[in-house]
Length: 134
Image 1 (cartoon, rainbow, N blue to C red):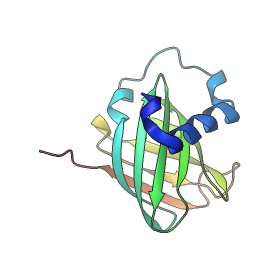
Image 2 (cartoon, helix red, strand yellow):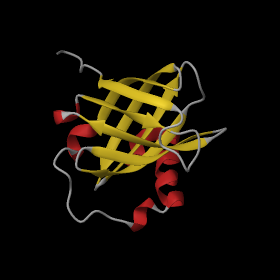
Image 3 (cartoon, rainbow, N blue to C red):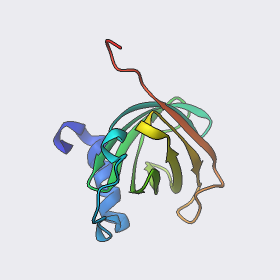
Image 4 (cartoon, rainbow, N blue to C red):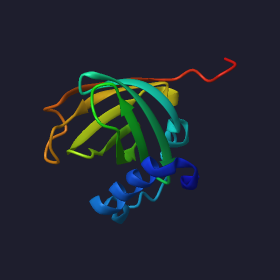
């Protein structure tokens, strides 16, 4: 699964390890977890963002490309339908909190401009990309 991510996925996994997120393993898989895996169109940091997320045993890792910022990665812990974690790119890092709708078809939340904040960057919204053939 992770081996297919290329370099950005490896960056996201590094965020999980470096933030210590792997220390707090969730004993029970949230029901919405597997539905989160996929690609999303989103708006973040003033730009259009292509976001790829992967659910891994209570955690979500991912990477993104944007027309307004550098490519980056994210990692966080999923509790129910709320994902809390850290995003990072080559120049900065910060926190975020996003809430997924039923079936993980869309999400909304906020992001922070530093590790200590999940809100001062502004809103972060997204919608699952439609699968080919649907």
